[in-house]
Image (cartoon, rainbow, N blue to C red):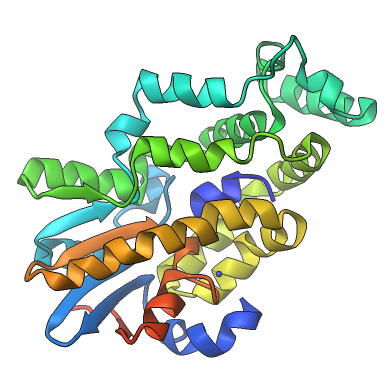
Length: 297
């Protein structure tokens, strides 16, 4: 259930009836959503990629060119600012001199120390932070070791293109709203978080390789089983806050886009699209027509 699975975003068998018709025949994780004469493009992303993962599927490039504006989950420039980092660190710090070592079972703390030492991760400098923050930090470090970087993710790539092209960029949530959701995870059981994080870190490379294949092929139900199933089963509270609650908050904003003549390209983490809780299923229930984006020749 490590939080890195969320950042990759990447929904499931219980949702097959709602989603399979949308994803089995997709060539990639990008969809055209229509209602009447209005439409938007809604694409799933991978937030962290390697340079070798480029070029991106041509469908994304075509949808970007056809769109009047780009809509991301949040303003990436603000999320990368020192101010945001300071706020996030504060939200996950222990109070009263407590440390992560005191929150963990002795054997698990030793396992965490051993992994950190093997990765040259500065665990001694992180003990004032709660388990979820350390989980996120470890996951990002491990992904960087494997060659993945935030600057090379799908969202960042198209943000840079939009800046160059002077294309309007909007967001589905503010940085403060992101922090509010993350802060709800601060006090989740530390032993559960670290135990699952260490397990996931050991198999991260294999999981990421499979996830990238599923994403490129538009196999959202397979991606969900690979990336979300553990989270739903082991940490339903995390799944609720990071996926379900945010999807519900985004839906009115996405529906409002159909009231304008402009065509938006909306990019969200791929796990926000799939499963019965995902945006595709929710939009379909609201009467929108959904079809995989067709490459223009």
